[in-house]
Length: 111
Length: 114
Image 1 (tube, chains in turn purple, green):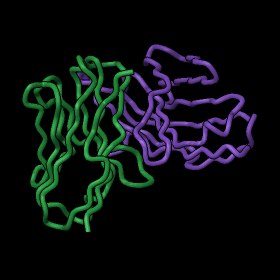
Image 2 (cartoon, rainbow over the protein chains, first blue to last red; image 1 turned 135 degrees about the vertical axis):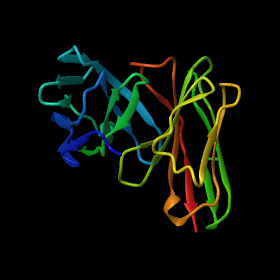
Image 3 (tube, rainbow over the protein chains, first blue to last red; image 1 turned 30 degrees about the vertical axis):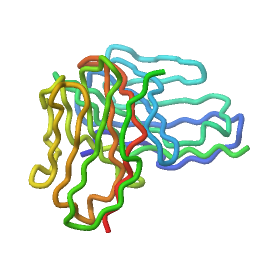
């Protein structure tokens, strides 16, 4: 079962533009993570934000978390062609930190 | 940099045959996850181990799937018998400890059931 739902499901932008992806989830969480997946490969962790945090930055990435709305957003600034990939949000919840993924956003950055 | 090892990279099998996937997590990682990812969808958790114990297998189709991590290190996921709907990418991931830490993924095993 999928916990999160990303929006949009697909996004196409020009190189240099910013890309924003949103994630909504259904139940209480301990943390929320974002992962990137290049076609046919495993996932790579990008950033983690805990439930008591509201915003976090890492390089060109900015993540926000609104637990009252059960939503998060990932902003990639100054996008590059190499950012072309699928992006997934994942929630960590429960005593055993079950990590549940959303359906993903497919990002295409056009050079 | 240490990686999660998975084999085989690709597996083609016929319906009703048995298949097995192997995963070796990063050394020292106590938590191990098996996910199934159907093309165009997000990974779905099949089973989660803490050391050698299963802590979540609620989404594992136990009539045909089994998983073990006997010594709390490497792990095997088995499907018997395979069905057409099992065609997917099977991903293994590990994390240093239970709770709040990022997952490290292997490259996955792409299964095609004919």
